[in-house]
Image (cartoon, rainbow, N blue to C red; front, side, top):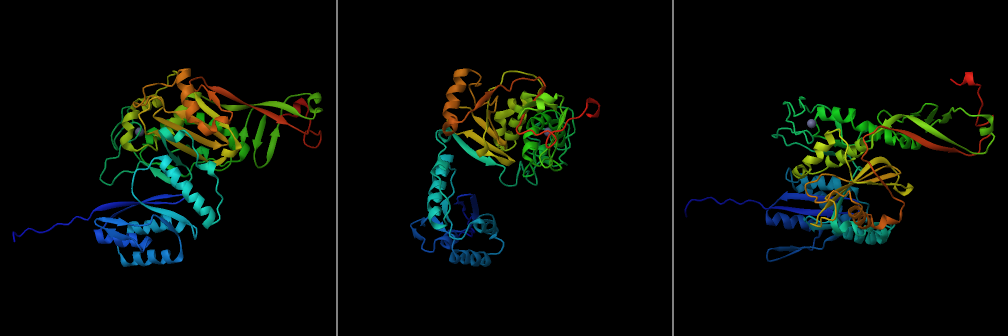
Length: 443
Ligand SMILES: [Zn+2]
């Protein structure tokens, strides 16, 4: 005996719980026996061959399993807390009879996940009678080069700091309590909405955007995106900051709840027609390049911190106020994509195929979709400004959605633009839904 003590470090392992709607990673420190016990909660017939634990990965939520999980948690005290989280975040959200996978933890590509979701969709269609649409799982060629993540369906905070960590702003790189390169004191006192609150975002929060940057963005670039989407917000009655908003122009008011009150200068001849087209001019303006900056800023806020080094030039561009050519933005208006909450999709290239942009975002608000390339990424070789670069990429990337009527819009301009809604009214009836005023009574 040499007096040495034995140290046994429990191995850390991860399991992926994948349901049709949710992925949950369970990370635990358990001895080998503990790991087998845990697996046996989900598959009581799990068996060991050599060092390997074998189990059937497809499981179903049934009363017996719920009981096994409950008694497993009770047998643990503190150590069981990740399992408790599994129960509350994942298992309790499953419908009785719903199938899910228990798999070894791995980084899965979007196409692998789509395969798993598709399998679950098919199985659940039978076990819990959900509808199954095969097309939903076909992202075509998009997933060949990019992994896809979605943001906005649930509450989430980004850029969390560890307790011992010094807080550093994601955008200005300033440290908490010090002055940043713009000469402003860096503090983290206010709640920073990852997508403008005026667009109704209450779910996505940035923890690592400093107060000074937050104030700067909301004063400079954010009015462009808020003003741009204001007509859609009012038309659909989508709540913004402080509730639903009226749209006010020079000669009209539009309130989704109270209807429309439009005063315009015209003659009785105009009103004797059955329908009429009026251009409604809005008071606010927007700048295309600032709208682009906002979209990119939203997307960068969800990127893992360690990847931000690739976007330092992108951040410089967000802060600068100069013009310059930018890749065109693909825009679409389509009611199938209607969403009341702003919604963000991240496409991150996982291949080395430089014909495709490194990072692409998709922003959805009301029935509008915008797909944009994040410019100035260090992982890109091309700028995606040339017609042939962009045509090749869009044709492949938009894939299954290529039959829609996309508009490829140049967002490079720094000129403030006024907005006009081409408003069409049908079925005018004088004295019923249209009234005449004398010139002097109009205001
Ligand atoms: Zn900052």
